Image (cartoon, rainbow, N blue to C red; front, side, top):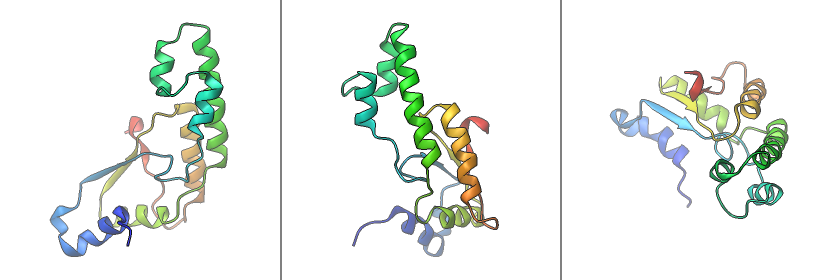
Length: 139
């Protein structure tokens, strides 16, 4: 049987209420949403090899950095438009709200692509359930 951190967290209340966290920070891609970013393709399009994307951008000179940032933003915006919530996300967020556990989204994606994605995914949530958490920089 595979270990499920979501199941573990949701079962923790019955086992030991004092062991629940006060807050949870989520990444967007692959956590709340189905993974949509093809990092090897993004890096190839940007011409940066296997290095980390943001760190590689920081080392570039203008205008190459502007060109690479535009490529990254294009990929992020495409992913933002096609994002879907992961299975169980709505239920987990509703459960966290019922337990009064705060949550927020942290991301390395651009604000320009992820903030609209958050609003789009919020619309996918059940009206009666807790919606997506705020972005950490909005708290």
